[in-house]
Image (cartoon, rainbow, N blue to C red; front, side):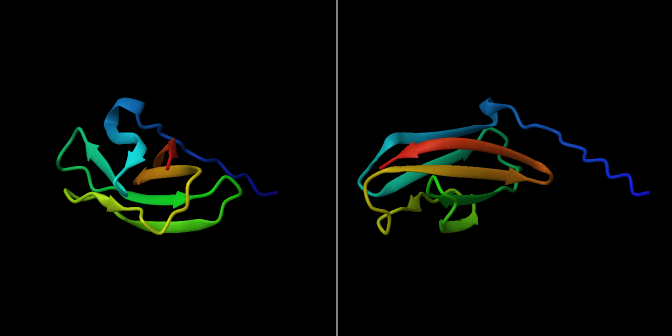
Length: 88
């Protein structure tokens, strides 16, 4: 027998500020409330195709390759994730 246990520690939705939404001028800003927090991001469409990924920094994310529509932004830190819907 195999027993698998997953430990999930959610990040509060207040951990990140994502703006502007809808996106203007092809730039999306993601700010962590804790400047020492090292986080990664992934932007995908609603069926799961990933278009952009990287590390959250002080620089905005250039989303010029995205066409108009709705996307999912996943912000990860360790075993925790925050999912936000963004519109371009």
